[in-house]
Length: 257
Image 1 (cartoon, rainbow, N blue to C red):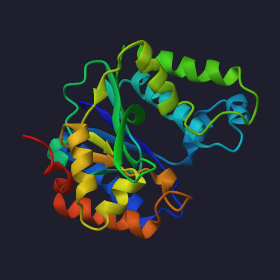
Image 2 (cartoon, helix red, strand yellow):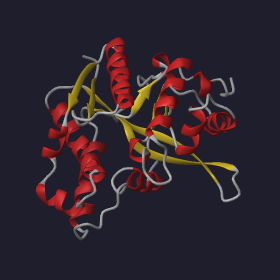
Image 3 (cartoon, helix red, strand yellow):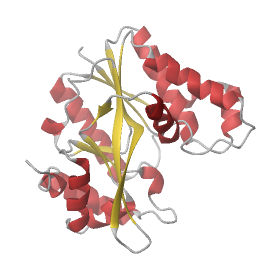
Image 4 (tube, rainbow, N blue to C red):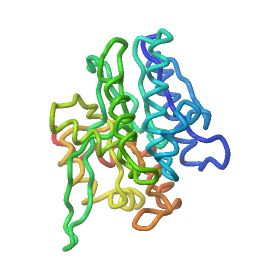
């Protein structure tokens, strides 16, 4: 086993497009020679009760900690490397999803495409935990877990934000010390998703130019589906179909060679 790929999601009422994402990751893992493990909602059992209480109704912070605890457990059990990919990550160009260059650990490089008040396209660079690689023996995983626990311990119940232990924490850490990033996993904002659903265009070109590299996979941001200011299921389904049909070239064709 060169690595263990980990994913988690509920096993009831799973959207068809999430099923397609999960299948794409399983296929990529098999082709790359990696082991694969899927964990259902039992993932939350790894989270201490007091931590769940502090998070209140927010499930994402609990998932953020749970995935780290699962990764650590699998490394302790003998896996040389663990790779976490969110359930809403679609592998659209398997040969472009390369993680061999990661040394020790890495998080996901995020380029977020949006529009300013005047309607012009704009991008912002961040770091997120939709895709992570952790090798056995690296100290960052334990520190990340400690940071989540220590932060929660000093918060009143119900005051922890949805992204507190994902992008918000990682962006702050990256300001102190550069974090190695995975550059081949993209991020689909609602603006980008709506254009992908119609076959691509200017937003795809702007996104590719801002990223500066091709994608092998893309996080579809399930938390923004069927919510205010997000996109609906039909749109994300059409975006998945476009990405799958083009092998990601709807975006990658705009990357400067």
